[in-house]
Length: 274
Length: 249
Image (cartoon, rainbow over all chains, first blue to last red; front, side, top):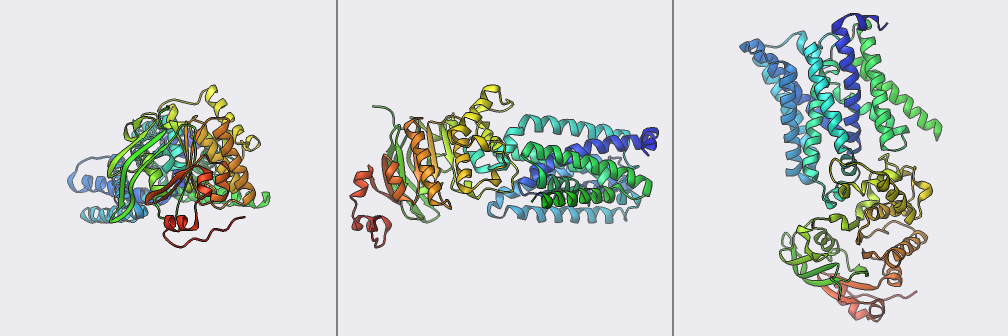
């Protein structure tokens, strides 16, 4: 069953990229979920869509060749900075930053898509993911993002844990909470933009949250939760990509449904344990 | 004479147009177990936030360990157990060990990792609060009293000289409150920690504290437990701003 993925280069890159995304998306998702910021992924994925739409529009309308993955990343990072700023402006209503940025992302996407007189299958691939959309160049960019994310999380793990568990205590202890929050949300933006090729704009947040929701039910301790989240994420991505390819379905759908299935099993295990 | 751990002079503070602290002058002597009492809205939590450097006073000066709080480099010399500690995210799947280890984050500094010695410190802090057998358990699965002990261990792990506790016994049953005070007494007498405890539970606190301060916007009383016990209903009525009846038990 794996033979095609080993034989054809474009499938090989999709598969390898999927493996990387299966690590970094649930890894960041763990911190996002415990900080009760799950919807941030949705807001940033819609801003990324605006960036992708801009890239596609620029190429179609003006002939500027901008890889949508780059324009998506730029928009996503800018969106993440705005979210963090809005969270400090509306201290008592921090969650309001999510619908503001999400609607801005959708609004911009609609404008760019309209200027370009609509798109075709390209946009469909970005919305729901694609097995065949990953190029060797995408693979290199996503590998770079994955390496960057892993190094930063490794270096700042104890700070991120302390802030996630008790941000006030971390502030009192003298940690640079504001800057670490900014760094973290930029990492999130990069991971979302990197994941969209395979999972799609509409489903990327699921890969960041569903494996974490499943691991949370059974994990003993934070590190074990991260390990299980990545394990579940990998199972979902590998099974989702392979089944998506053979069933001719966008992998975003199969990855999310696999994640959901794992979540249901985890809920069942917890109930049996009780 | 040793330098006081905390020294506040001429402190004034408003939230908007509401005056919260009015010309506060007081000191926490080294080695004290100070109980801070007063009505809700009397400025107790604000006073703590000022000592922690989370708020800046409009006037006056706050010295901690002989340095202005805003310039204090080693903030790990202060341990803090928040009022919010018992309203933390109970679903957060962190073990007791992980939570206590997080208390070392600032002391270690960036890009540094736990050494064998640090891991030893974590186990020692957990042992100090009598929770060794729960080291690998998720904190969310413990009782309120046990969770508070873990937060004390998190404050203790960096070996602070001053520990500030903001209403740590809210929502904890009487037996556990008593054990909690015994633990604080041990920290104060055996481990020589200076303690500042904000509480409404004056009955139990007066059995263990060395100093008591009554605050309601201004400092109404500062003395030892015997002096506190001699306060009359008229004194308490003045402190609390309304008639108070004393009930002894």
